[in-house]
Length: 261
Image (cartoon, rainbow, N blue to C red):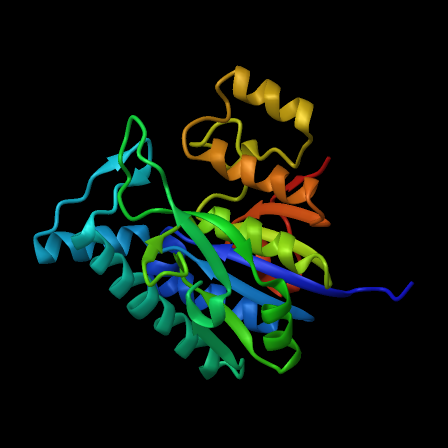
């Protein structure tokens, strides 16, 4: 059996992509990585700031953005435009042949609009399929996809889609072609027992320990769906998942919190 080529998929968001210093460090470290690579990014703070400038109200429910028609225009401009193209330009300056795209481009990521429940999230998409073969073809052609958190429904409608979920689903789709390492990169050095103490890093989490951390309230709020996405990826074929900060990517090495089954 032929050994699969390695691929590192980095999902980056928060302050990392929205502050010049941390973005520059991320791009330097990402450009220096060996092997096939792919980047999925967020940009929620930038979208919120732009919405305020345009007089569009931001509504969040349990950390998730409600996306009405006006907000969809804002996130499309910010995610698919400003944030995405800043990353692409930065990588091109570092000799990386980056290709900025959304899930709608090449029909890479198809989703469906989330059904109305207790909360109507508006134009928010839940992923139905990822074209791993299409992304593989781009990678084989020498392009490095930089994917913004927007998808489409196949009938002409763009949909705002959670970047963590996009990264997980994309990593799973690419695991048919590569030995995939998925890295969630954000402000903290990993999963912490005390969010105010960087030295309280948890170096490894397995499913039973994860349930214990949730029961004790150590892992809560936005970290829960992030870890849910991590374990979902592992269960569906991704080889390794880590949660780290920019410093954890330095020199091509990976530190932070390792998730494993």
